[in-house]
Length: 336
Image (cartoon, rainbow, N blue to C red; front, side, top):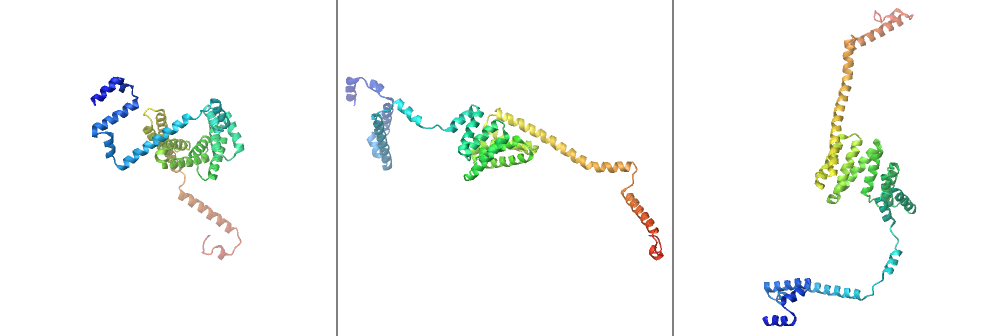
């Protein structure tokens, strides 16, 4: 072995210079082979000791590498297409109109986006994707009535398509209903948000963000209906999730804490107002009875006796004016 390295040194320099001129991959390969030889002999002996399945796997990998190298050589041998030819091929492809509309929405150019979506709807009035995006545009423009109508149309279109509802459509419809207000619309929005919450929870780890958003929206809806006690519970659930997802001082968590504090304060105020109202309602008849007694008014029994005596006197006077026999006039030997 020493003679071999001496011949190599005379032919092309020292072993160190040969090692320096080798590529990095060759160096690593040579290191692996050297380690294997030190561990258990030459590479041939290691190959002999490998199981049959391992040998087949190594052969398959070697064959695949050979095929990949052959394909790479064939591609290099093929003539490369010029730049203008590639450009002409791209010109033949029609751009997706929805991508351009999404860009307009990201640029907050909602007027042009609405016009483009309306143009697409003329070609396909029942397209749920176009209807949903148009509802989002109307929501950004604060056109609540148009947004509600569009989201409802998208919901109906999804129902016709096989009942695969888009959670974003349900959420958007609920948001629009809350913005419009009114007890009827708020009750519909509550049902939609609870449905979104159930669907998000069913997705488990894939619906965490949707669950968080649904809790926040449900709390806002319940607050709009003045159900502050239930709104506190929804807001607290959202805050608990936010503390796990975001940092302690994240703006979302700060906003959630403010909403929880506001809802708790209004819930306490509402409770005190209800207690006061119920107390006043119960105290009104008691107060009236005490004042009647204070001014010396007759008791209920005296009122009944007075009214009954008045009626008896009146009936006696009427009978006296009638020309009746004595036995009929006083059948019991007395007055009526």
